[in-house]
Length: 117
Image 1 (spheres, helix red, strand yellow):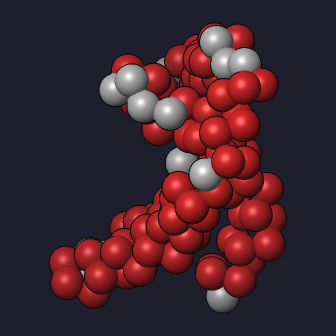
Image 2 (image 1 turned 120 degrees about the vertical axis):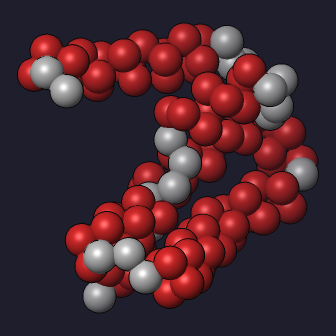
């Protein structure tokens, strides 16, 4: 991948998040407050079950240590722009996806060091 492409990638991701965010209204987020079960299930799945599934894949496939570490590291930080964009295209609850991305990103400051050790 060229240096120019790597420099443009964060701008492209920011643009995608901006365009997704401009389509949301405060009432979209009220659904999360009224129905917190979906949010909590998503949060638990992203923080606990995604790393456990990644661990199972690493144990079964036994990749080289560098690849295994990469798989685990990526599983510790799930969600993000891609999931938000795919949620939008699938006509899913974008507000829920964006909220999960925000909360998991904030939690990763605490969970990432714990999970890595």
